[in-house]
Length: 232
Image (cartoon, rainbow, N blue to C red):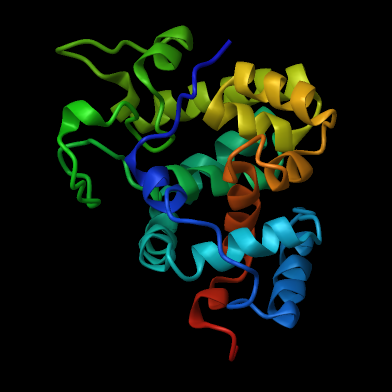
């Protein structure tokens, strides 16, 4: 139903470097962050795939994550209220952290600087919708108007898209994977991997690590001190 839609530059900056072994984030720090997240209603699996994702975000992705966490307060009222109103889990607040670093990506006043020309980045806005998906969810995208840069409209569309994906898969890990890679890719991964466990599909190489990195992003939202290194 959806293309590999949200692989725009911000996430590509986090995705294209090779995976690293868990290590920069200690087991104790990981467990502490999980406990803090659980207190916020976010139950992150205790899994090596998530720990590797967290280690990636706190090393190669550190600068991007720091900027995103710094901007989070600007957008929390809009994003958190929309998530609550839509009845979605608090985990979803980590999606804009991974997608855009909590920046209205592509807006004239965006504080995130892209090294690519605008024509090469299909995603725009806080939630990084591509044009096809944006139009499917009621946003106008043409030469004169781009509703993706209206944070309220794109956030409303993101809630609808994520709700539809969860209704399709009845699993938030698979819904997140489909948000990034598209439903066709997720359906093919389930068939190839003979599993609906998103972390096992990532581990086997059937899906990219996006869903695990959203989970890791939720841990960073719960415990930003993870960015300060293993000595915390």
